[in-house]
Length: 289
Image (cartoon, rainbow, N blue to C red; front, top):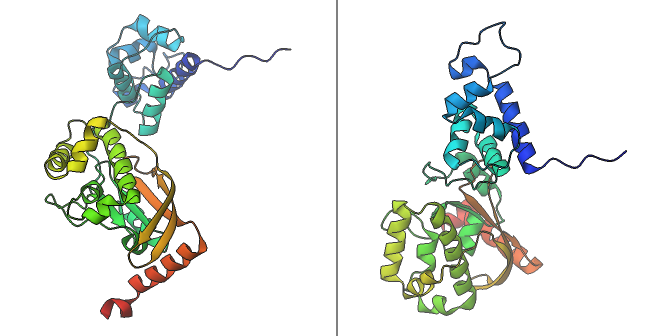
């Protein structure tokens, strides 16, 4: 007896839509349930088509797994009818083979309390939280030791990209590890900018750096993009000496617009140096001295 082939993406989409339709009650969308007159639970196909503003035949084909591609506006209309969560909406787009549109909501400009507490608890592992514009929203004591936390800029934000392309320190700008970090941060910023192309905060920062940073003006036209961070960073810290750090950038599932960057010691010397420096930074007696 042969094994049935796995369902196609279209068949999965059709099954998902039928499941959503059957779980959605008429009362949930403001319709009369007509107790006793419905042969199946949930909504009828004609009700879904009317509520979503699409043709009945077209929606029927979609539930039948036909080779048709819905537009983002139609998918959003269906998501509204079925009252989908963010994860369910993304799943609907993925099954339809359509790119998920960029988020319409503003990106966070403050760290959620739970994430800020988590980052503080990671000491002596350096960790910091950034938003799509590379504003640093939270950092722990170990991160303050390892990286140069940006001072507030003209807009009040602690912006990592602005700090990396600050031209007032030519010695630092000439160091290759620093230049690589600046370039990769810019590449991730560029990818985020495409998703938030008309955001005034992005535009203001780009305009500012185009005016103030020759290095930024050199790199910006190259259109380099990057959406991941995993590797090893070797740097010569001014007070801790040589450090070897493994770095990883994570996406918190509680807020996918944010990025949590962590540095893990790559050798015992780095581990000991970070532990000692963090203990000194958080010791009240040291802070009063």
